[in-house]
Amino acid sequence: MIPKDLRYTKDHEWVRLEGEEARVGITHHAQQQLGDIVFVELPPLGKKTQRGERLATVESVKAVGEVFAPLSGEVVAVNDALAGAPDLVNKDPYGQGWLCTLKVSAPREADALLDAAGYEAFVEGSG
Image (cartoon, rainbow, N blue to C red; front, side, top):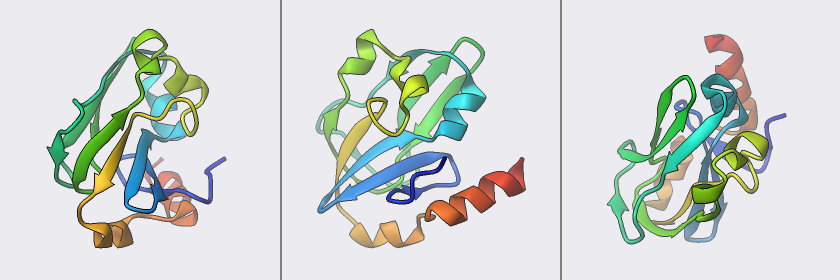
């Protein structure tokens, strides 16, 4: 089930826009492709990033996945719970498995993100 209130990238990140901030995570599809997640490398607080730059790394028993910034901005929060429980990304990718929050510096970039229907069509078409 792809949540309808989020926006998505073709790199399988999701974004929850909340005013000037954007909470970021990886999609159910991405965590399913990676398998059991054993480690998450989060960005440092205060890191400034541009859309498309590497933001985080998610390691599973079978692969390492790069997480790219869906929007330009500054990291203002990270999900510290993942240090002790990286499997939250598998169990609840759209909730407790979020990765970080960005203070968005270029809000218009969000116009390029996919809605739920667009992301679903992308995943089904690339399968």
